[in-house]
Amino acid sequence: MGEKRILCVGLVCLDIISVVDHYPEEDTDTRCLSQRWQRGGNASNTCTVLSLLGVPCAFMGSLAPGHAANFVRDDFKRYKVDLAHVVEHPACALPISVVISNTTTGTRTILHAASNLPDVTDADFEQVNLSQYKWIHWEGRNASEQVKMMRRVEEYNQTCPESQRVGTSVEVEKPRQELYQLFGYGDVVFVSKDVAKGLGFCSASEAVKGLYRRVKPGATLICAWAEDGADAMGPDGQLLHSDAFPPDDVVDTLGAGDTFNASVILALSRGRPLQEAITYGCQVAGRKCGVHGYDGIV
Image (cartoon, rainbow, N blue to C red; front, side, top):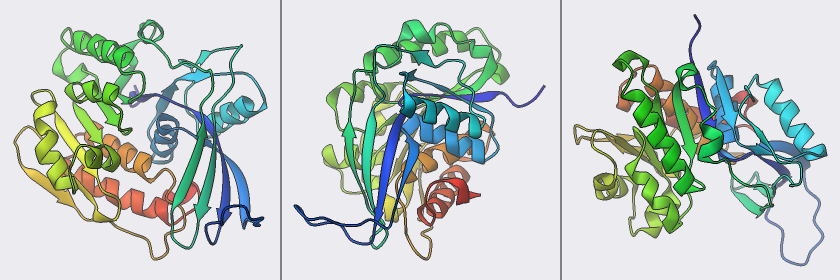
């Protein structure tokens, strides 16, 4: 029997990316260096990276019909991401993000147009055969429904021998109060720099030490801080740090956080130590910042 899959639950959208060498001034007409369509969304991007790193994976989220959705579906297939748990909504539209990617500074500016496409619910998640997965990762979105999903996995794990339990992780990326209940769930919690700063912390180490009391007993808390690397704390209470591994030229940071998360999940799901996992995450995220898109990370 082959390696069990990793399931990522969250958003998929279409990213329309305009690459420029300087950020345009307001009310001007500027030519971009290039433009491309790219499948986006945190959970979607995490699947892309896992697939490139050689991990069988699946995506669970909502999709709508149309040309953009066909592009997204075809791109999932190109990366061999399983779509058995995608929920179709015929009367809805796919969300679209317009991204300005600045090659000089490496920054990405995102204008996201949310649509009427609903997030997947616990009722949808009930259809998932948990025995097929070794790890499930949630992109924090409709938190009250996602809490029910994570509780369902906790109940399943109580019926399994330890070797067959499903590992869980959750990303708290957006500074929204509703999402903060997710800190108390998941074996691994990823908290973003934006959330940490919004809660009054000035560094990854401060955030990890200050927020660790919010996670469930025995869990791991991880915070990446862009060019300052990442910090983490597990149940032993030891603060761990990895430096960043920036490329010679930073050209595209879009999806760097998703790349970090995917790489850490991969390492932890294969039993690697936490220090090794966050270092690996920083290394792969650094490679991603040096290429457009994801194909050059391996």
